[in-house]
Image (cartoon, rainbow, N blue to C red; front, side):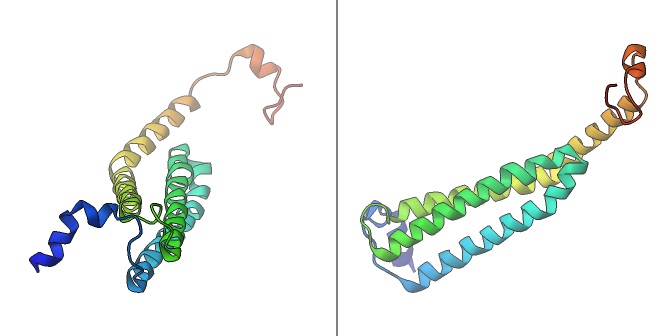
Length: 151
């Protein structure tokens, strides 16, 4: 068991220019990146409609979608280079950095979902409630049609 973990400590394992082709490992990474890609697409579809009603959801439909999409595309490109055995670009450290970025983004997504978003929604609703009771200046009110456009 200690022999298996000792290879992860060595820098040769991570920085080896052309690691050996392992179909099981590539299949695992491919399925992982595919799940993240499908999750990003579902995330975009789910929060796109909500972001039109509540602007705090724009962060989900724009930023997290682009983060996940970018990381999965980079991951698939790195897997392709690894499959083809292209030196230096197929090193394990690049794939490890990409996986680390995806995991950090997932943690930030969960944090934003449960901690920051409820506060932003309540602030937005308070602001909308406040804006309801602010009177419209007379010169703007008389020059506007009922649909809100100027004459």
